[in-house]
Image 1 (cartoon, rainbow, N blue to C red):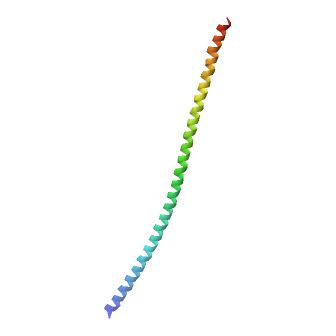
Image 2 (cartoon, rainbow, N blue to C red):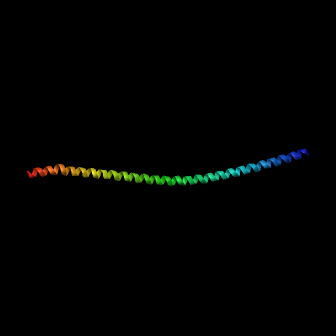
Image 3 (spheres, helix red, strand yellow):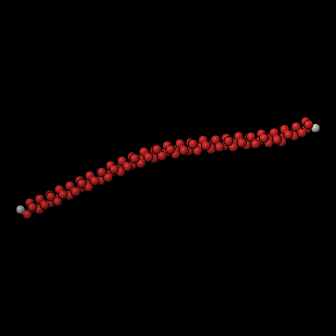
Length: 97
């Protein structure tokens, strides 16, 4: 008689333990699923950020190239003005004498 009661008690304790373990596993699964969704969202954001940064880098490179082009044109214009000021004015002085 006592063995049957002890067996039933052990069975009920084991069943309660099994239910508790299944509930814990369910909560852990929900946590993992939620984390996976957050990771996918973060991955999407990282992808968009990477594209934006690449576009910004291309724009910065284009701006730098344009700046160097303008500097080269200004340098050429300064050389041209200096040439006409120095050499053409000295040719005009020689021609007039």
